Structures are given as C-alpha cells and as structure tokens.
Length: 379
Image 1 (cartoon, rainbow, N blue to C red):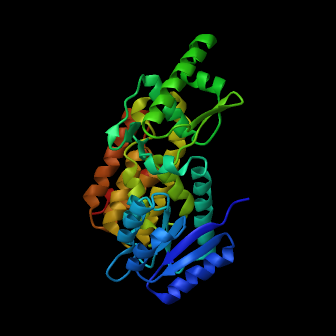
Image 2: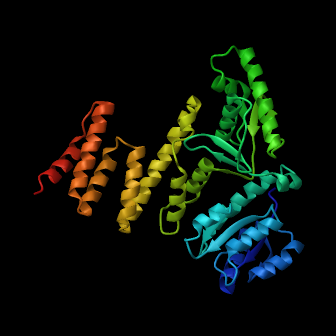
C-alpha cells in the first residue's frame, strides 16, 4: 500500500489556495498538513512541520516561490517541490531548480494526478535508502547527448577503465531495469571467451560499485537472480529529462513551448554518439525519432502563431537532424517564399540536391522538383 503524501500548499490568493487544496483532497492520496499565504510564515514554521512535498505558487508579493523553494531545500533536503503558476515564463527556472513538476493554473484533476503519481514513485525510490544517505549524497550530473559524461560535484568522474564507463552507460540506458549477466557479457564482450568475459564483467562491476560508493550512491547497484540492476535518485540526466518531458506534456502550446525549447537545446547530438557504442543504436533511433516529432510539432505551433523567425530556426534544426527529408525541405522553401526570400528558397534546394547526389546518389522527388520549378520560373 502506498502511504499518504504529506504536503504544504503556499499561495497568496485564497481562492487559488482553496481550489488546489480541494483538488488534492479529492485524490485521497495527499494530506495537506498546513497552508500558507506568504513565504515568511513558511520559513518560520517549516522546521516544526513534517511534510514531503511543497506546492508553491511562483508569483507572490515580496518573495517569489522560486526563492522560497531554494530556502526550503536548504533546510529540508528531502522535500520535493511542485511549482504552481498562471504564467509559463518560469518553466525553465523551475526545471533548473530540479522541481518535480510545474503546474499551470487552472489546475486540472487529470494533470494533478500525474504529478501525485510521480511523487509516489520518487518517494518509493527514496525509501530504499536512509534519510542520512540522501542528505549527504551529492547529486550526479549525467550527460548522454553527443558524448557520454558523468560529473560529481561539478568534477568529471574518473573511470578505472573504458569498459567500466561503458558498463555504467548501459545501466543508465536501462535504469531501474534488471539486466541479465549473460546479456551484459554479450553486449560488452561479444568476442571474448565466456569464462574470461565473466571475470571481466565481475571486475568491472566491482570498480563501478566503488565509484558509486565514492560519489555517494552505496548499494545502488544490486544483483539478484543472475541479473544486475541500477537504481539511482537525486541525479540529473539530459536524456531522461527529455523523455520525462515528452511523456508529461503531449501538446505543444503556449503553456509548454518554453519547456520544449529548453529540452531541444539540451539535445546537443545523438545519444552517446561520439562514444560509438553499438548497443546504443536502438536508443539513438528512438530518441532521434522523438526529437523529430517534437520539432515538427514546434514548427507547426510557430507557424500557427506566426512566429516566423523561430519557425525558420527550428526548421533548420529539423533538417540538420533529418537531412534527406524532402518534406522538411519543402517547408523550409515555403518559409523563404512566405518572407519574400525567393533566392534563399532556391539556394536551400540546390544544397539539398547536392547532398542527395553526394551521399545517396539520388535526385529530389517529383513534388520537390515541381516546387523548385514553380519558384524558378517566377519573374
């Protein structure tokens, strides 16, 4: 049975405060232990309160919810933060403060249920380690896009061997999932004799556990039924953040566009692209496909809202990641025509045609050529 979540709610608007409290009470899984209408009262009383999550309005007179969140987490490191606001402009700041969620007013029951489910998942994970461990454990920063890298306290983690680093990359790719020992051997030592590979795996596991212990994550790598599993909490990962955002926010609109711009900016290259891990091919394709779909949704949003400069910017990004897509090229050509840049429309066509010939030895299709001809004959 999942325990009740203890929460405080902070909002200077009484109607909004009551609305959120009522919504939380309707769920039946959250106990609101105290409500506040200003930040100073929270700071004065919080040391006497037992709560696991703080729902904070961002726009409050004299003391913003963003500032309050930092002070709460300084005093109670195990408290999760959920920001609540009528404004979308704070989305990136909220994510940088590692809030567990960002809710837009008016709050819908279905959206609030998602937030509470995520809180339950995080609380279950944190219960597996002691509070003392959580308070003293420094967070890891894990970079998966472009080149795999891990930082602890802003310093790069030192790896005993390249295979230990690659093994950790495998576990991050399959986080919270059991990995059969022999499957790991097949992934990392496919050409080695089995007994030798088994020894290499055990040695690498030992080094990896020592590294995790040294950065504050003892006991996070477990072994059971011939399988290993890595469970982590309190860390940052660009790829996991992208997948979480895409799972939580299905629509691109004025409430979510800044969050999507932020995660696209983090996508600095394909998943562990520079490491050349062959086993990561499926993950590369999966994340790239998600990125392409997101970029197209963003382009459609900018087109609808006549934000043409941003439309062109993200069309170019989309073409960079999908360089042989005639559909994307056609959109870019139409953009240049719409803003009166006929010459640029012709230029991008010729560049695209050149890449097709050099890389694939093919020519653009009929629809693309017809669009080009219609532009070319304009006098």
